[in-house]
Image (cartoon, rainbow, N blue to C red; front, top):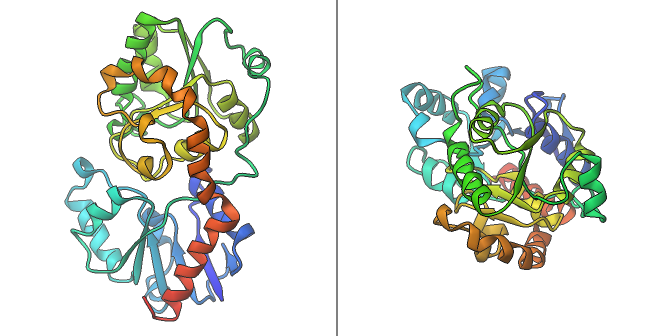
Length: 313
C-alpha cells in the first residue's frame, strides 16, 4: 500500500515527523509520489499545495494538531469547511483537539498520540558536564522551555496558546525562592526573552541548535515547564519523559496520556511544591512514554491508514 505523506518543508516538527514515518512505517511512504492509495495531510494548513482534483479523487486523511478557539475566526472556519469536502477522516493527537473539531465536522475522527523516537531522545549522563558545555551555572536551578512563544507577524506579541505569559510569571515566582537560570532554544522566543530581561532573570538562549544538542539540553535541565493553554502534544512531554527530564505541565494536549498526574498542575502559583516531586516522577513518566516508542506506535498509524483504504472506517 502506497501513502503520500505531505510535509510542509518548514524545518519544523512536521518535517521530522513525516521523515520518521517514512523510515519506520511498514507501508510504502513517499513525500513526492502522488500516485498512491492514500494522501496523508500531515500539515493541514498546506492542503491547497496539492491540486484539488487529486485530493478529490483519493482517500485523504488530515491531521489536525490543534485549533486555538480564540483564533478560529470566520476565515479559518471557511478554510476548514472547504478542506472538509475532500477529507475522508481526521487524525488528532489528543482529546482537546478531537473535542473541538467534532463540533464542526461529521467526518470520522481518530485519536492517535504522537510517537516518540526513542533512538533519538535518550538520557545523557553527567549533567554537570553538559551544563558546563552550554555555559550554564552549576549553582542554579536550570529551568527550560524549547517551544515558540511569539507570534510570527510582529515578533513581539505573545503566542498565548503556548502560555509564555504564564511561563514568565512562574519563573519569576521560582526566582524569588530559588536561584534559577532559564534555558531557551528555538525560533520566536522574543517575548519571553524581553520579559526575562525586564524581570532581571538570567537566561541562556540557543536559537537553532542541532537536534543532538537539543537532546543534551534536556539532560542539562533541572525542570522543564510547559504552561500551554492549547496544544496537540506538545513534543516536550514525550521528549522529557524519554530523557527522564523533570517536567511539570498544564493539563492540555497529551499531558494526561504521557505524564504522571503528579506532574500536571492546575494552579501554577503552587509550582514550588511540585519542583522536588517532579524529580521523583521521572521514572513513572518514562514507563508511560514507552508505549509511544516509535517502532510499535507507528503501527497504529499504519493500521488506521489500511482501514481507511479498505473503507472499513
